[in-house]
Each structure stands twice: as C-alpha cells, then as structure tokens.
Image (cartoon, rainbow, N blue to C red):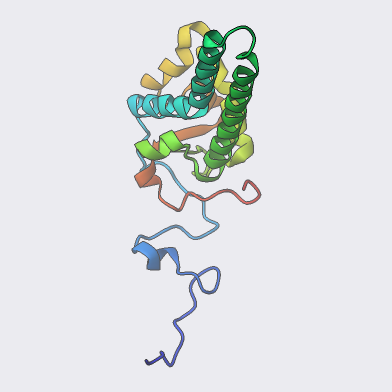
Length: 194
C-alpha cells in the first residue's frame, strides 16, 4: 500500500475540509460577501401551501392521533377506568407536539427549511442578504403568521400576487421563500444566529 508523498493543498477556510468549489464545482461568493437573491426564483404559493400542510401534520398529528385514541379508550372503558390512560395519551401527544414545534423551529432557523419545506424543495432566507434567518427571526416569523389569518386569511393569499411572493409574516420578518436548489449552500446561518 502506498501513501502520497505530499499532502493535498489546504482548502479555503478550515484545514482538512474541502472548499465549496472542490465539493461540487459550483462557484460560491466569498465568505463575507453579501449574497444576492435577484437571480433566485421565489417559491410559488402551491408549493408553500403544501409545505405548510405537511408541517401542520408533522407538528400536530401526534397530538390529534393520541388524543383521539385516548378519547376512544375513555369512551369504551367501563366507569372511570379509562380516564388515566386517556390523560396519559393526551400528555404524551402534547409533549410530542411541543418537541416537534421546537425541532422544526430550530431547523428552520439554521437551515431555512422545515421538514415540509425540505420535501418540497423550498427555503426561507433573509431578504436583505440571503442568509438563513436564525432561530430568533424564525420564531418572530412563526408568531407573526397568526396575522396572516386576519380578514379571512388575507395574509396567506397575499403571496399569490405579491412581487416577492411574501405573506404578511414574511414582510414583517423581512424573509422570502426561494426554491432551495437555487439557494444552494452559500446561504449559511449569519454569525451568531446559529
């Protein structure tokens, strides 16, 4: 077995890691340059709605399922014998829902993608520089999404005709949702927003 005489040249950034160009041959902007979104298509309304529906099922599905099972156990049990198993199933469902919400929030802050966004190939990024939103901005956006329901869900429908396809929550948080393939790995978390 032979070993190379000279080690490979050091990569840009951290030693021992390949540069982004070595990984897939695509040119990426320098580490501290602003990342522009002008050539990246915004995600369409149907794709965003599908991702939202998938995320709602992931986040709340365990709660609905376990609460329904608990209700059936309580109804079919004689007397009060089904109350404790029903309560336990409901608490497990609540815990699973909270865990899913937290994991999805952290994931969206760090990568710009929830599970639903990842499956449908879209990513949320900051409109100003194209970086990942960070957990704090992702939380603000999540809380502001309740404003989308005001006036018959106008905030959700707004993305149909908006130039950047933003909902009210997106506009408040200064976030856009783009096609993930075009966003690429250059969209990294902002310093300190990990």
